Length: 204
Image (tube, rainbow, N blue to C red; front, top):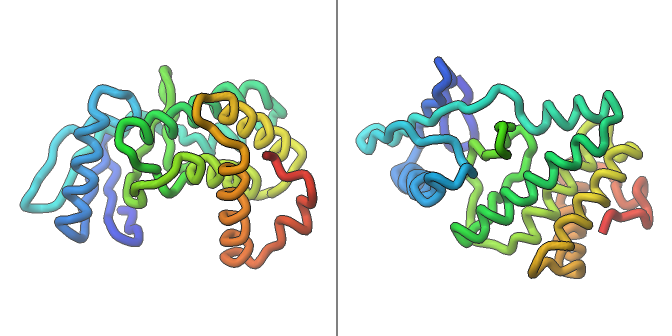
């Protein structure tokens, strides 16, 4: 059993049983799953139980994007990871276009690898927002997993940023603004000084 800030998840027999602590949170995530049905951006919703505020969700894979990222860094397979990171960006952009929302928590452990792409298993923090915020947060997560700010991480972040900025409606200054806001928040939370360590080599 995994207990989060808001909800509880039980993983068993290829199914995630997610119980919400409020009706509003349950209805909100149920609506997201319904809107994403058939898009490949979320696991299959197997069943919902209104009286129990519970969703049964297909657990489509055991490997998270974070597992894959850490493995690729250990084996120095930057281009292999970059092709998968582009799928993450496409997933974030697709989610925003379909729902008008952002994920709000682009922790790589929240994303599962599939044969045909990437899907998210947690929409607790999803909300209306600007896609540039999700992309900026993705860059920050990529940079600061332990060991943080390695040459591999700096390089992959630059390449991820440039891929996003090649897409329609992407704006460098907007991405840069969200990146620095996220950076300041991260430094406060973790008590670190990324600007001091990373200096002028910001990835955007």
